[in-house]
Image (cartoon, rainbow over all chains, first blue to last red; front, side, top):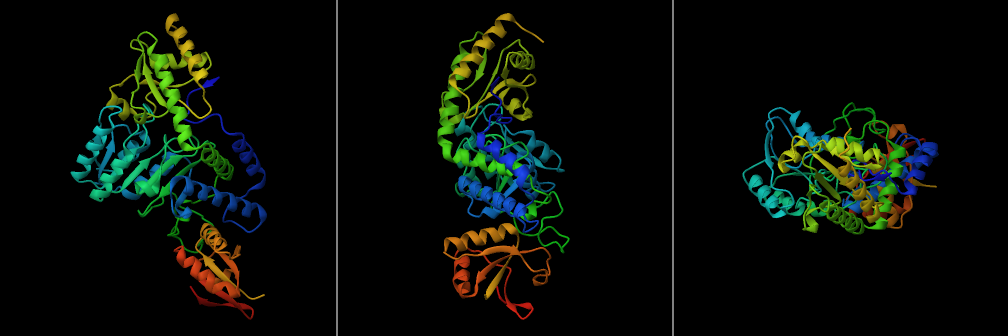
Length: 379
Length: 83
């Protein structure tokens, strides 16, 4: 199988990730729950993972690195910490349902959507500046669109936030491990990310990096600390980490983080951008294919969408899957992004790459797609 | 051997303090805090040698880390000597 669905989950993991998961199942219990060797090993692994993430993402205090189940979980904590009924929130036009549904669940939130055209970073920066200057309580922005790979001008948006005193939540779901993401540069209130995509950890892992904002728990329970008090502890990370940790996941995530650091984020970014550009060239050679790409290499990461007018995206995705090509078709849980790009209601077919994909795979995919289009294959 | 216990807010806080002390050349051990030392229930502590307390405090202050309390052994119990 050729796997081009890394934006959902990276399927191929470094060997050391798989080994760490297996070993954790056999040897680790829970951090903060005892002094015996199984608990101590879990504690040490969890702390090393926090340190590794703090180093990679420019967080000064490893206690501000929170383990979550995924990026959606992390975004829920961040949003529910800062948004109140009636809050005025500025978001990009390319947000995922992890953001928009969470906001929709809070009554009377006043939304301003900065829905600038795809890949136009200057327009996006100016749009955010205007919206923030008009007054808001919070800005939420993804770093990279999960549908189109559009890289938002995050540092300029963060600068606007600082200038106007607006807290910023960053959804780094598609950029963590793929592009530089630094808390010390952005000064964000929160940065949310999955562990199972560009960080090459197992599913069921995510991170929330906490800045200066007061974090509020959305789950309550045991933390192995301050057990007599019935309120959640005031201090991080325990305030946000009720219940038993996913130690096999955290052990795997630690190795994934080490893989990213050893390989180098910039090297991974260059590789994925090369694949995106190559795929774009291959797709544009096929008759009738509409490709959502840009010549501005810094405005797009390793995610590429395309459509074939007159052809159903889901049918194309299914036809490719039957021929051994794993892609994702439809709305990608981001109807707002499709509205902004004009690809509603049908959506797109999305290719998304990882460090383990190759140019040859892109060429094999293009050959298969050419065959599918020629044969006019349907379900 | 005489020692001090530095009470932590959580196991992560204890680990953070231990790493910072290690960088200052001060060895410590993480242990569960004796139940009677805090009224919070379930705490962790760092154990350091008595002669290293001053250096440890200085080191932690520089890293903007502070234990919840510092205890020393007295008879069959413990006595708080500061924060």
